[in-house]
Image (cartoon, rainbow, N blue to C red; front, side):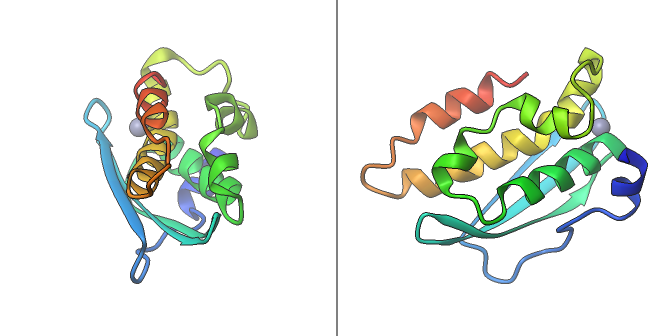
Length: 135
Ligand SMILES: [Zn+2]
């Protein structure tokens, strides 16, 4: 499944006029992704990513984008690492590869942070801590 997703990643394209975009990389492996998000009120109406990464990074980002599409911002911000790892059976991944797997979740949380920080009562700071505590 990981190989399949890495060959044919889902939601893998650059979005026209995203509301928020965030970039981060994992220098240890060379994974580097940008995530684009579009919102319709409280709902994440579209999400895509582009960049390059190893098979685990591409697979996890594919899975994550599928998970959050159509979800509310509050549902998406509550996602935890095992929600992503569990989809691919990667709960027992070696520590060195965890960063590959969770880079996408970190990027998502920081993109949501950017989105919420722009709103008056966004309570966004928790997201920054969440992202920092992933790995
Ligand atoms: Zn990697």
